[in-house]
Image 1 (tube, rainbow, N blue to C red):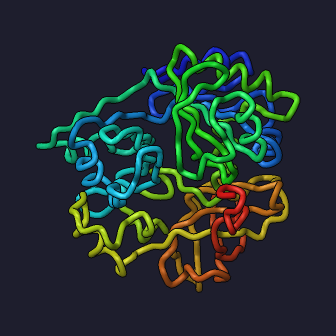
Image 2 (spheres, rainbow, N blue to C red; image 1 turned 90 degrees about the vertical axis):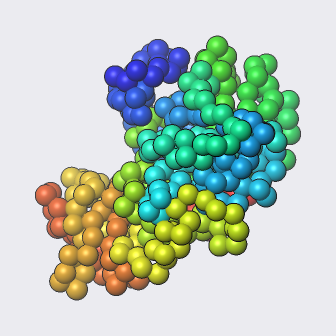
Image 3 (cartoon, rainbow, N blue to C red; image 1 turned 90 degrees about the horizontal axis):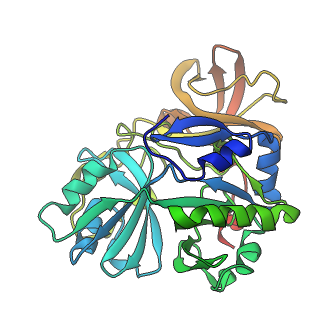
Amino acid sequence: MGSRVSVLESRHVELGAGLADWNDMAVAWTYKTSVDEEHAAVREAAGLFDLSGLRKVHIKGPDALAAIDYMLPRDMTVVPVGKSVYSTILTDDGGIADDAIAYRLAEDHFLLVYGTGDTMKELEKACRGRNATFELDDDMHCISLQGIISVGFLDRFTAIDMPALKYFHQQETTLFGQPAIIARTGYSGERGYDIFASADVVGEIWDNILKEGAAEGITACSFVCLNTVRIEAGLLFYPFDMSVETSPWEAGLGWSVSKTKEADFIGKEAVFHRKGNEKIHLVGIVADHDDAVGEPIAGGERVFFGGKEVGKITASLWSPRLGMSVALAHVTPGASDVGSAVIIHGPKATVTGRVSSLPFYDPEKTRTRD
């Protein structure tokens, strides 16, 4: 396993977890509970994930704002203390080096949370010549409570007014008497919260959430479950659904690039040059497969349209909740119109399907934002 360690690892083992390495940390890939049970908990009550495998880095100093504003294509000058933003992180060539959430904790302090991409290389560029420092923080753990009951549940055990905490806002508080940052962010397509706490207290918070929430259906959930809910919600996973070869326009993330930002940022000229020159589009696909037996689509399958190969599947699942087989795919622009009939060729089967709008689940995204 990886060299990074979650202090919750022993708890995952007690829950029957099958551990796997992700981002240099052993994570709960599966639990004794079935993925369907966990998935139902997220959609009907709330699921608790250990996302400490995400990397957390603090950017501090008088030029912290200037550094992160140069690093990200979002206009960070309009982000007040207490708010956060999702952003792509670009290469000099206008590709996607990673994606991240940037939390503004103070005027001169940002917390950047990201996955497996080359974020540190881009951060070094951004801080060079500026009065700003950056430091990885593996003592800070992240657990995530995602689901419809999460707001009312947390409201009972924290000092802040949880219903009043707006989407993509965060606040320092106490939870079960322990210091924590609670952010209204997540990766599930449900209203939920990411909870940041130090290694010495996160275990107590984790234990109390599961203990106090058991009667309401709160369940520990695995990475496999996380993958199923994020695909339903049309949320992307680096480097499979986007990469350094993909521009934000191709990944459907053009909205993460400010069109009015006057200040320079990494990859600015290149990314706008790639706008209108997309080689692929990220799309949803619904496959004509009426049950989960055999799981004919697993990712990597070739996609054909009009008799020609036009792309590949990047992620897929059978969704019991939606009653259909769904996938994310990269296809050429000519095959990306919603409703286009496609054929998916893979080692297990050949199935027909059609291009779908995203997300598959809660297309208006009301559950996340309300």
